[in-house]
Length: 413
Image (cartoon, rainbow, N blue to C red):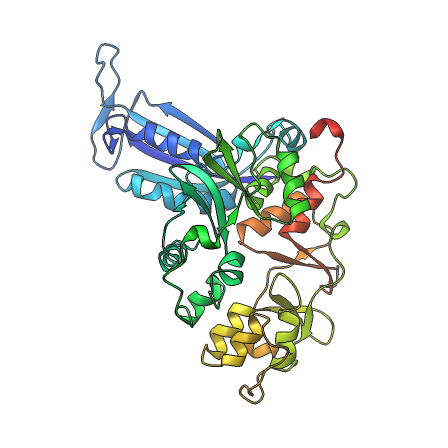
């Protein structure tokens, strides 16, 4: 039996938020954030902690009646959307509970993937930079907002995109943005005479709001990209990310979780990649770094003598625990060196550097449920274990997207 989270919001009909009815503002915010389902119910009579009795009388058109708003969604969506909603509800009463589906919605993920367009899932509020913005300002903005990708616009017209890779490859930025945040800022001065247009990737791949999700997923897989701008008449109207597409199979419907929209693979174990970057918990730091930088994920799974998962080592965690003062460490993390030139504290091993405990999933878990866990815990990688807890593979977000959208009929394109 599948579960969902139910949020109940109790307020009055006369309550306001920024010069509009609070209830209407809440519903619009949830709609913009692609909440799974919202229902508003007007009360006839009641009272709250204030002991003020609300009584509905047919002739009192301005009566301040109680209103109940119910929002039903997945835990992952709730955790993501709630920070945007919370400031609006400081004077309301809000409850949360887990509910069980006895009978679920009948619009399964198969139909969603076949019928939905990118307009149904895209982000409509997108941070952008102007083509003439100085590069140091671009980096400062991206660091402040924790952005790894921004569209570049010129008078609202999309002219390019800027990613982490662009900044490192062409912008003279010595560290990826996530490593800069760990290191406490850039380790070298960012060229101030360069503009966003000098570093951006021009003429990026784009889609229109009417493009089917299937086609967007194919573009992401073929071009190995995570995000695609959505444009209409050359004007940016949204952004579709890999995570946005994965959410289409992580909604709170029994059909999505128990019957993932994959024709030939029903469990996460069937799509898991067997080759996993791993290190033993006693592996020395130099060898740990070799494993971490060997893949595009910049991380390695740590196992014990029985091949059971005990933790995860990431490049950011290595930098956080060792420190940015090791110049050769920074070069190794950015793949500018083959080995460490200077020794790191004697005895440092994978166990000293790992994040633990680490979320794992059983190979028998349905794909939809595994994607739910991945998104709920904000994980880029899911180690897959057998019945005895031993590592038998892994799934990252690219694997999850491929498993969800690949091998479908031509009518779904």
